[in-house]
Length: 437
Image (tube, rainbow, N blue to C red):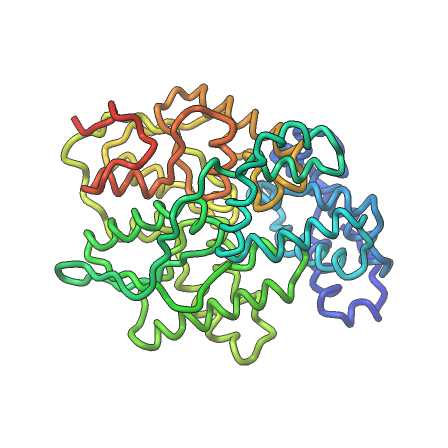
């Protein structure tokens, strides 16, 4: 794509980086076929190509973000299906981050929108605050359908609709979980923020499974939110602060005794942690450590695939429909391992139609853009149910929460099923009739 950035703007590294990315776009439009918002809305400006035009116009002219540009950039899920499709290698993920940072610095949002985004940024990344907020919201869940009818209050209604009826007990742990026998590997496990509150059973299953496989699991003191939630709202400084805290925490464990991996069980977080080398590239005190951590980061299914697990002795009496989280398949390019692991463990694995399309979760997207998210959820639920599996498996807490609100089928993390198959307890929520034959 031809650009005309003035030299004085190109002196800014952000503008220079954006210009280099924009120039790679060749207008082919292949991205429109896999973009969830374009498929849903049919508006060129709600496709990656259309958004690139908007970003180019905004940055090339050095102007503040206007309401039209913000509208269409806000509608982007950052699902990155376009990066899988693009034949030209356009780094859309980097471009949309740069654009959102510009929007955050220069745009003027309505007061209600600013207040909501500020609230999300100071609550969701902090487990204690998030747990308190969920408990306080529980008595008001019945208001969700009423609030969603009002345009201004719709995000509050969406939050109430997604809130669980009850909040699991706080089982966050510290220290090291050691296997009973020989130690094959040593890893740090990311506890994270939202997942540790919404579904702590995921990491509990991960620790059990890894320990049985001879893997020592470190819970590093001081780690927390990966930074993705605020990064996707354009809050670069906050994202860097979260990333820096995690790098310091994991490097302390690595220096004590080298880690073989930093395991992440929420793929949205994993995509961000793998990008820490870029996110902290301008921090001379942390850049090298950030690259080290990024190189160690692995989705739980990536790591388990390296261990070459044994084939199951008996087939599991369960058919599993696998939902490929966008952050896992498009962001991290992890596509085969989860399905192969489930099949090797004895499950019958089924794939739904349109596996490339987002479920509509995308961090806080299902709160900020609940109507589009709702349409995508309904479409995803139909496709998952049509596969006729008895259980749905996914590798990201956002997807799990979103899909659970759209289907009556059990929805579990992939690692919970693997833990069960290799000797762990049956996951909570799994119907009692599902047992090893």
